[in-house]
Amino acid sequence: MLKYTLRRFFYMLVTLWVIITLTFFLMKLLPGNPFGESAAKLTPENLQILREQYGLDKPVWQQYLKYMGNVLQGDLGISYQYPTRSVVSVIQHSFKASLELGLESLIFAIVIGLALGTYAALRHNKAGDYTAMLIAIVGISVPSFVIGPLLSYFVGVKWGILPPGLWTGPEHRVLPALALSFGTIAILARMMRASMLDVANQDYIKTAKSKGLTSGAIINSHMLRNAILPVITILGPIAVNVVTGTLVVEIIFAVPGLGSQFVSSIVSNDYTMITGLTLFYAAILIIVLFITDIAYGLVDPRIRLGKGR
Amino acid sequence: MESIAKEQFQPAIQQAHKDAILRPSLSYWQDAWRRLKKNKLAMIALVVLIIIAALAIIVPLVSGYDYKTQDTKSINLRPSAAHYFGTDDFGRDLWTRIWWGARISLTIGIVAAVMDLVIGVLYGGISAYFGGRVDSIMQRFIEVIYSVPYLLLAILLLMVLGPGMKSIIFAYAITGWVSMARLVRGQLLVLKEQEFVLAARALGAKPFRIILKHLIPNALGVIVVQITFVVPAAIFAEAFLSFIGLGIRPPLASLGNLLSDGAKVMQFHPHRLIFPTVVFSLILLSFNLLGDGLRDALDPKMRK
Image (cartoon, rainbow over all chains, first blue to last red; front, side, top):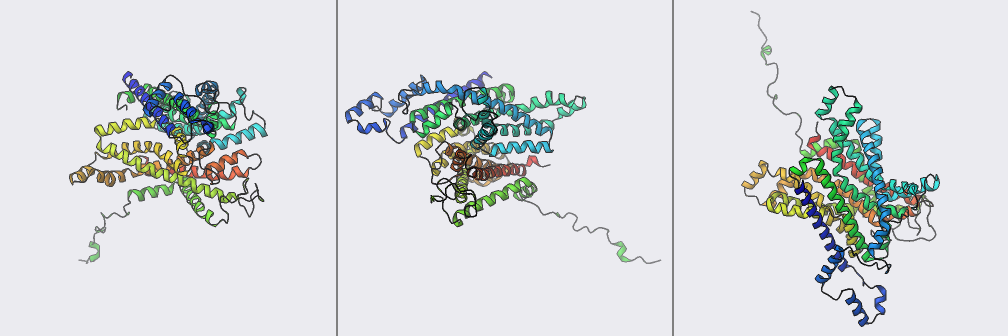
């Protein structure tokens, strides 16, 4: 297990390095002048001083090493949009809201998704199954930026049950988290249903039945536990879903999180902010993937002992 | 002695056709098609997709409007006989714009899938066929690419390349081929140990001929299923990128930017959200259902 963990850890570092490198060189390719429109008013001497100050006069490989060094020290640069704010301070300031939103939506998704999938499997080929799968397939085919405004408008504005936006208390988190979790609910429900049906055909379920266990006990201690295993594998992709989803959902519900920062920096061409936030998001996702890999290795010995690559 | 008629000595059964196979033999694809036809949902999905594709091709040619001509006299009209789906805030005909958008979204989905297919199949094929060190280096590379979140990479690429259809397809293809490559490799690793590959090699076939003529056709079922899931994923990616302002730029329409514009004015002009949503969801839903159906039809393990 230690060897497996170390190998995964090494890949995680390589991936992070690839992303930092990619980001750096893509940044070099970005159109436009890093000093913005004010550069036109500067004399060549001043421009030269500025270039020296930012290290832009050095060869690209030296800039690259400096950038790598900065990133490793947790310095992602200064925002172009707000010259007084560094990217790291923006992250510190607005990450909390995104994290709360993401976690809450993940909890919704896991609870509702697994319940829906289990219900569908237990009612296999009956009306309950079809209803549950219909909900799931709608979740896959209607994007969160349609579900979001609909929830906000109907539940928030028209019926006034929950606040339609903003971010001032726990009741404000319900709708955004729900909108964000829709797609994930669908994926989890489908996966859980397939997994449950697979388990239901196994011999040990027959054994359990012939021992005379009640169906509740069979479902609880035999089916659910085994069926949930494969579902863990997709927690990585699901985390990716949720994180990229926050970009959209935060805008719709005016959540002061990283996602809305990200989108506003795209709109205003704030290059350092975009690259800094991309790096941060990528790092989070890669760490989550690493953790799911390890978790799956822990619960399923075949992965770490066998051809665990 | 009474005479016995000669006919009574005839054999009871005509032996000649006893061993003949009465049912015509079906090829793999005929068999899959037969099973797909039994799956009502998948067939409905297929029909819906054909209708949508036909509308996306025909409507922009015959509607009498185009996607960019503005008309200040007919702003935000509700659906009527002149404008089946109403108009938007520049007075552009939504019926035309939606089918233009569907055309662009479908093109993005299909081209992205084809690029995925070419890169993924070649990469997976080479990796699996040569095996050994080639395979393990190629797999390490995939391992790294696989954990790069593609939407984030797409955002960065679009910043560099500028928004547009080509950039979206390029950004999707550069990150999307990995699952296909993994899938193809997994299939080919099993196939390449079989006798017909040995026979081909013994007859002197070159590696690329074996990969393209012998291995890939046998893995085609899995590849086709994967494609039906790549197309909606690429369409979804376009919509997502359009929503955050990096997708198709107006005045050109795509389902993504129609949806995000519609969502903004939903309270006052619901038709501008409803129609794009219905078309978009039908496309995604149909591809997903068709993919599910194809998986059941093409996967021999599902046979009873």
